[in-house]
Length: 72
Image (cartoon, rainbow, N blue to C red):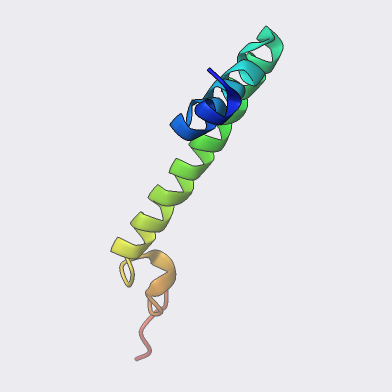
């Protein structure tokens, strides 16, 4: 298969990426660890923002009179 045919089918890019990552074990392990770290950070950020969006006005920081004594 020529490179022009590979580019038309879209396999050239994926095969090149696969060969670049899988060529050496150290690169593969680094790719997996970095992907896991970045994926964990993205999920943590997304869940945190979703929790804040769903709890606006219910958080400790949002209640202004919490912890204050009423004056007599």
